[in-house]
Length: 158
Image (tube, one colour):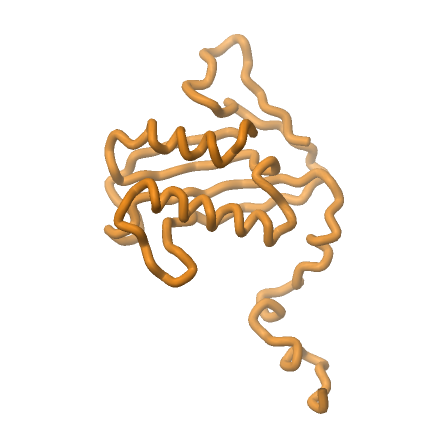
């Protein structure tokens, strides 16, 4: 299980996060690309809080697909384009993490990939427990893209 590190010899974290996280090298590691507030239907809310919630929804969906959960997060990095949004971000982050501590960075930036994106979050997760769901994941991008009937070696008479 990853362990939060907050040394007594330095100033404590400025909010609910850990300065560092230690985990065993014998683990599965998931690196999550930056997730913006775009919904499954392609829509992007105009409201910053709604974009934050949608981005967190996307992040948790990726964790679930990999057989992981919020408690496996070891690092999150968040980017907002709306100055002065740190309090809103911390409120949403703390609720979404449900008391779980991980290393965290929040940055206010001039822009993201497109002006309609106001928020983005990327993360790393580590699962130190064996997980059958991981062993059952497709082993290549091709397996994700092809329906079973079109998989290499599939019989045409099915």
